[in-house]
Image 1 (spheres, one colour):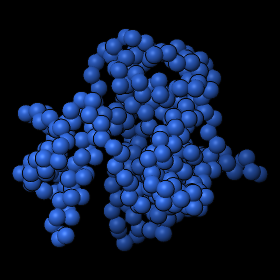
Image 2: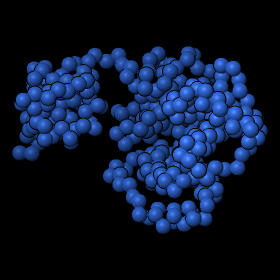
Image 3: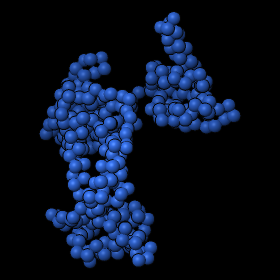
Image 4: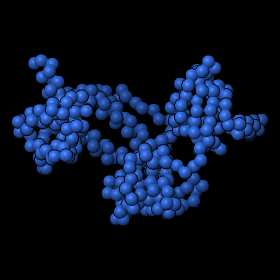
Length: 317
């Protein structure tokens, strides 16, 4: 069996997997995914049809499997099985509790279709993988809060939430959820708030009650990252000069503070930010590595950092 035939067999199998997992699949997308021509994809689809797979081709829409047609489960490779175990460990540590039970049931279904040799592999390896998360999150007591949010996004219907703010006030909000994201060890909703007529972030663990309504969204929304960049807050340009030896320690956190660009100079790495957190967040982050950094602009940041250091000094005298 030559390499060309093996590559085709792998590709045809992968196309079948795509058809099983999506409502429709476009030939252009498959060609881009497998780095082949569209004509090659046409031939691969024909191969599947000749094998008895009932594929429906809709002009301009793509391919789909005949409704109601079921295929036996496709066997997983050893590498895929190992990736499931790693993902399961991550989910145990970082998923919201309202997703935990659903994910566990889903994994049991995945395990049920594995070969016996793969089940033995899981049993032998799962105790050798661990994920450490030092942060203990206070989760919402609402059993299905995230599934309810995701259902509202899929159905494009409004949610009513009872929300506890950072200063412990409880407010009722009607929101149109755009998406959810995990950041700084917490789950958040990005949503359009009907009361504020603006986009807001809501921390999931602060939701006291949640109700999914039948009221449709008032407008269409794009992808969540389109709105995570959205803000009415004024931004301040900040430039700092950082010693090279510390860069590796802030490479992940810098993006949360409006990082724009960096360039290497003979004196260190010059970093530029457009930040909304000039009053509190940015100076408190900067103080964690201030002995390795020089503020180039603005002057007001120097004053804020100096005042912060003085206040800390008074606390430890």
